[in-house]
Image (tube, rainbow, N blue to C red; front, side, top):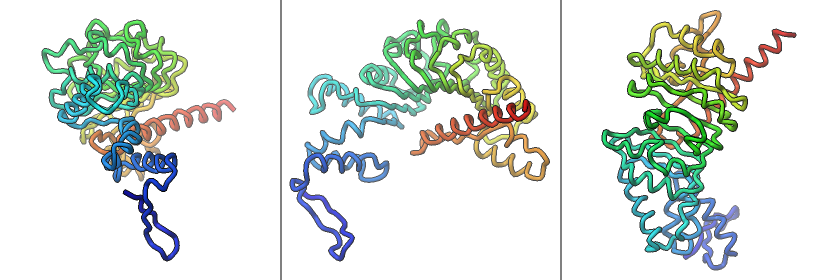
Length: 338
């Protein structure tokens, strides 16, 4: 077994036996290779058992599960690791730092809870699902796996909160103790009109980025707006920006300018409205002849494609836009006072 190295001279590609490389250099090469999202990535773990042991901690650091089959496979790996029927050490899942769970159709919540319990070093968790009828035991506030988490970044549907735990208080939810980025999608009528305790928001002393997500659908937007207005007085002093994301679902909506204004800086200079990327671009095009383009002045765009490989970059792109918008407003206020 050897490594192929491209030479800058006339020799072309040369092959070196792997054993001729210093082990630390060979290991660094493979650990770098697995961070390539395309190739060779997972293929590195099939080179040899030795190299598999080198690269698997990196391969498991950031996990995205697109299908129920993916959940089942990683759960089987977890079970065999705990039972010591695997070459992985018992605490192997401590390597997981980021976990994204996407399957929309009846995700396997029992397996997910086992996974969350095992990933004791998890810092980023993005969940795009909610529970089916009869799965209430897995709600936040019901299952102990949630309380064991110590997250920095979390995206979780509001529908996953138990009706008696509709708050962000760290005593009720220890997983919020160190949270910095929190996204709460409100996209179903089953939870949005319930009585949330927003006073608990002020207890999140490390929270810097908050995003409330709604959709232009039925009465969701009005109710989400009411929730936002109730939350604003309780923003912690640490908060840098709050994004009010309106999923336009490819449709134009009435009174769009007023909706954006009423749910943005008029509430708080840290509140920024985000709309779908396509909708934003269409509005920019329609307003290019206008003296004032309210969409560019008051809103930002967000791409959201969890099935794409760049979804994490798209989340960060939204935060950067929102931060820039808040900074711009701050600068404008300083100029007005001077």
